[in-house]
Length: 115
Length: 119
Image 1 (cartoon, rainbow over the protein chains, first blue to last red):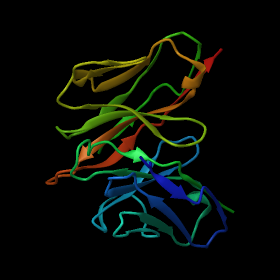
Image 2 (tube, rainbow over the protein chains, first blue to last red):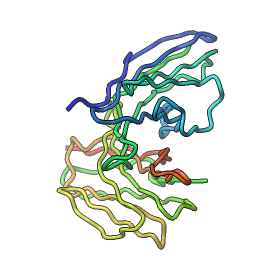
Image 3 (cartoon, rainbow over the protein chains, first blue to last red):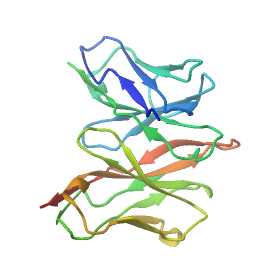
């Protein structure tokens, strides 16, 4: 049973650049959420996608955008990178209407460093 | 707004000791779930336990147990007979129920408690 996968594992960018992070949900899951975790902090919710639409959004600027594909995989895009965007980006998946819908399962994350 | 507070920043114990991690939450929702996740140095958040707002029965699962008290908005987590492999950051989290919807949305996390178990 494949878990949540994310790519790349590590990424280094410079200020002003754009970045795309990718996530494949756990087998059988159709909902993907993205979280940002700064060093020493708890994860912060960015947004959630279901049926290729953004269903819920946290307190993040429009520079953060996403997409969900028909196969349920998802991308997180961040434009005009700032130093403060350096963090671990975590993807989580669940089944919107299924059993144990309340539990989100996380991937290994992508560590983004902005110089 | 939802809020989760983990007052213990770091805990250090010796192997085989029992350790309890504290969590206090705030929410206006009547339907919600509480979770504990473990984050080892690799970074991946590992789901440990969950409890819904309607079930205050405390349970034991292996070396893990939890104490959910709605009256004090607390959801404490205990590891019995700790092991070195338990060393990690532990997060308490609260989920909301999408208003008018049928699914649970975002998780609100606490700041985490760093647990170090010494041999």
